[in-house]
Amino acid sequence: MSQVPIIIPLVVAGISIGGMWQKKNLAGVWKRALLAAAVSGILNSGYALILGYLKIPGTNASSNTNSLSLVTSGLSGFLIVITIFLSAVGTVKYKRGKELEPEE
Image 1: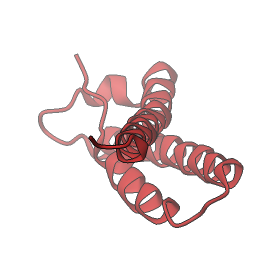
Image 2: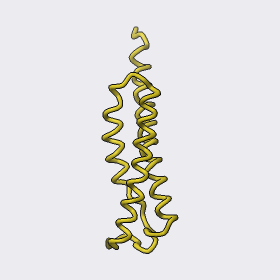
Image 3: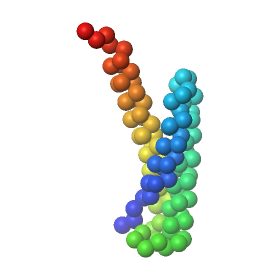
């Protein structure tokens, strides 16, 4: 069974989401998050393809080059970045809500 590489989506999420919080326009942030997720999916598919060609020990090289594995890698790269973004948005909204409540 082959494993889907996740290092590329984590790096892309860290770089892109770290710079997004300075913007006040939520629509612009969503567009950048979707763009970062798409780029992450494409890069993750390319990384899986390269791993398949290099036949790295510990990976199932024959299944890394088939189209299902490439699609799975791309989809997981996209979803990892979106999941990290949504959890960050939820955390920020939760913390802002706690700060806005008056303390007694």
